[in-house]
Amino acid sequence: MKIAVIGAGAIGGYVGVKLALAGEDVTFIVRGANLEAIRKNGAKLIMHDGSEHVASNVKATNNYDEAGPQDIIVLAMKAHQLEAIADDLPKLIGPDTVIVTMQNGIPFWYFHKHGGKLAGTCVKSVDPTGKITAKIPADRVLGCVVYPASELIAPGVIKHIEGDRFPIGELDGSISERATRVSECFTNAGFKAPVLDNIRAEMWLKLWGNLTFNPISALSHSTLVDICQYPLSRELAAAMMTEAQTVANKLGIEFRVPLEKRIAGAEKVGKHKTSMLQDVEAGRDPEIDALVGSVAELGRLTETPTPHIDTVYALVKLLAKTMNEETGQVKLQKVA
Image 1 (tube, rainbow, N blue to C red):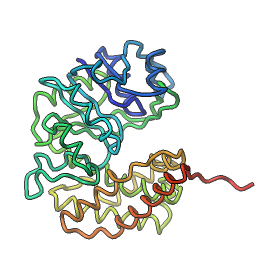
Image 2: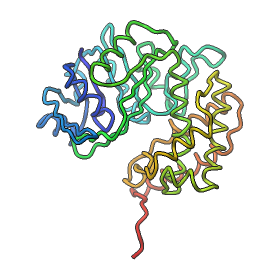
Image 3: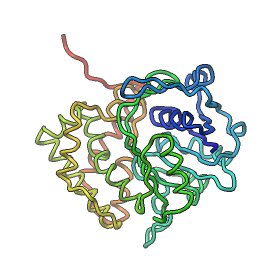
Image 4: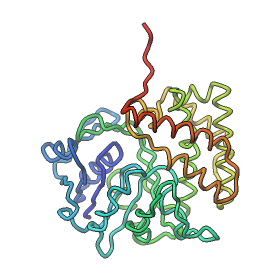
C-alpha cells in the first residue's frame, strides 16, 4: 500500500521504517536535516536489541503534491503541530484514504460520532481556530494509541527503546473492513495493532498517566519513580487522576485499571524522564494542551471541577511561555 508518514521523528520514523521493510510503499513527509538525511542515506532504525535496519527504498519529500494520494496517512507529529499541515493534507487524500492519528492526549476528533449532547463539539484546546477539524476529514480517521518508546538520535536515525503496540479503532466503535486492513498492514510490519471497539477508552488509559506525570516531571525535573515515591507529588498525581477519572466517567468511559495500579505501573518504569521533561530540557515546545489543557476543557464541558489539573496546567503553560520568550531551556546541573 502507499503510505505517507507525516513526521519522521521518534514514532513516525519507527513506524515508517518498519512498514517499508515489510514491503509497503512509504513516503516520509519531512523537512530540514531529516529530509536531506533520508534522501541521501535512507531511514535507519536501531532496535532495542542493537540490531540495525536501513530502509533505503523509502521516499522523502516536503512537497505534498509530489507525494500525491495515499492509501494510508499516518499523522505522527504532536497535536499542536497539526494546524501547520492542515492546508496541505487534502493533497494526500484519495477516494479510499484512511488517516491514522497518532497524537497523545485528547484528539481534535474526540466528539465526532460520539453521541450525546456533546456530539460534534470542537475541542478548542487542540483546535483553537477550528482549522484542523475543517481540513482533516474525521470520517477518514482511525484513532490510534501509541505505546512504544523511541528516540530520534540523529537526522534519519531512530533508536527503538521498547514496545510495539499500536491499537487502533473506528470512532463509532465498529470493526470495519478498513480498520481490519490497516491492522493487518501494521501486523505484517511486526506491530501489535488490534482493532478495538472503544478507542477512546484506550486513549484515556494512556492519558491518565500522561496528564499527571508529564507536567509534574517538567515542573519538578523529576523522574517517574521520584514522583511516585515522594509523598506530596504522589498525592498530587492521584488528585489529578481522580479529577480526570470523574470527567471520563461522565463521558461514558470506564477505566479497566485501578488508580493505584496505574501509579504503581509508572513507578516500576524507574528513573525515566517523561517526554515533557525532555522537551523542557532541550528547549523544545512541550505538548501541554493536548495532554493537560484538553482535560481541563472537558471538565468545563461536563461541569466537573478540576482544581488540581487547572493549577498544574497554569504553571506548566507559564514555564513554556517563559522558555519561548527567552528562547531558553531548563535543565538541572550539578553544582561542583
